[in-house]
Length: 295
Ligand SMILES: [Zn+2]
Image 1 (cartoon, rainbow, N blue to C red):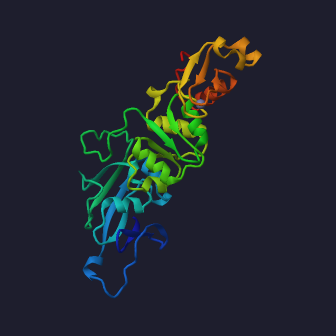
Image 2: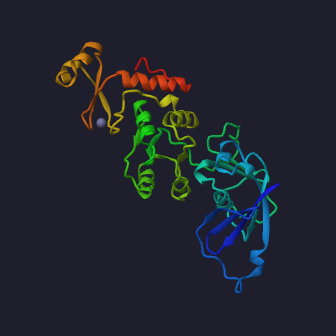
Image 3: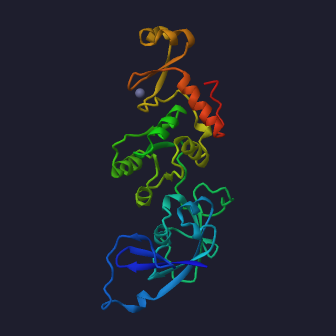
């Protein structure tokens, strides 16, 4: 069986070392000096962990889909050992300790079997105590600085996505907290922040694949409302007649389109042109079901 050693560090710190002696994760803290510690508090103990479904994405290959031992010292909270293995708490919906659901703060004392399930798990865990706050009823997002194209695609589908290419991590976390937005990110560090309650870590790097991933993972199909959002600034679009914006439409476009949309924030004009058709074709190729023709 594979194993980790989680080495206790004074305060809330841990360092996790795999069975080849390689450090795989660490949390901040001050290392304990050897001479002046209560040695009983530092007896090495073990628990057996298993992560389910997409939580395995965060683990090194050899620890995926299998039981592995985690050694630790002291009585760390189960959340600390999960995050020491690189799995952010925002991805975890249920922890079973010897078959019983426990909270993130539950201390480990050694000898436990810990099963960790993801937020968007398809297994039937309805009867268990889920750890996550209830899903946000009207999903709204804030995307990190690496996800500009994903933000545009989501807006094209009508979803509310804040994005600026100069957002600091702290700004993203603060906005997410204040106005209840789900953080979309490729940065695990953001999701490990204890103040973050709703977040999703994108596995893919290609923007179209990211779109498919997030739509499926968060089950967003029912929230599609094309031509409701400006893909440039996230403002709201209003349907306008060609006469109202006649002077702003290229002559060729006047000939082929009769439905136009005006952004109430940046005043850009949109229509269902070739760019829109191209994006729809890409999404269709990825198997994303869209019923946008009536929009
Ligand atoms: Zn706009």
